[in-house]
Length: 306
Image (cartoon, rainbow, N blue to C red; front, side, top):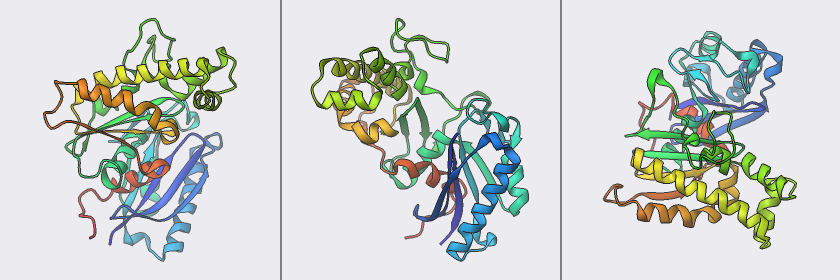
C-alpha cells in the first residue's frame, strides 16, 4: 500500500489529506488558506497540518510517495511557481514545490486544480475506466479539464485550456475573459445569480428554488443556462471527442437532473462523435476530487492495490 499527501488549495480554504493508492482518503483536514497572511505563513501552516496527518495515520515522511498539490491558476506545473493574482495575490511568483520539497525532502508536484479534480474522478470516480475524459465544473465560474489517454491535456507552454470560455452568444453578457456571451457568463452560478437579481431574486439558490416551484421568471433563467450548456457542449465534444463527459461543481451536485436531458440530446445528435458513443455522468467525488487527484499525481506510475 502506497500513500501520498494530497492538497487542494482554494482561495478561502485548503483541504489536505493522506491518499492511498486505491484512491481512498485515509485522513484529511480542512483549514483556511488565508492568502492575506503571505506565502511563507501558508507553508508553515500546511507543513504543520501534514505532520499532524502523519501522526494520525502512524506514517513517516519516508512512507510517502510525495506531496501532490492542486491549485487555481495561473501557475507553472513544470517549475512549481504560482502566478495567481486573482485569488492568491500575495503568493505571486512563489514556488510551492521548492518550499515543501525543502521542508520534507520528498517529491512534490503542482497541478491546476481543475486538472487535479479530473485526475481524481478519472482515477477513483466517475471517469474510472475511460481514458479520454472531459470534465466541466459549474460553480461560481465554469472550469474544465481534459484527459487524453489518461494524460492531462496541455496547451502552448503547458497552459491549462479555459474551456469554460467557449463562445455561446455574441450578444450575451460581458465576461472578464474579454468575450461577450461565453459559457461562464451565461451558465455559471454567478451568471445565474446576476440574472436572478434582475428578476427580483436574492441569489442563484432562490432561482433554483423557484424553478422547482414552477416560477416562470426562474424557469426562463434556467432555460438560458441550459441552452448555453448544450451549445457549449456541442463545441467541446466535437473538439475533444471524449469517451466520457463529467459534470461537476456545486450546481451539478445539486441540480444535475435539470441539465442532463439537454446535454444527452446534444450527445445523441452529435453524429460526428465517436462511433461507440459518449457517456454523460455526474461527478461522484464532489469536494474530494481535487484532493484525490493531487495525491494521484504522486502515484501515477504505481499500480493501485487490489
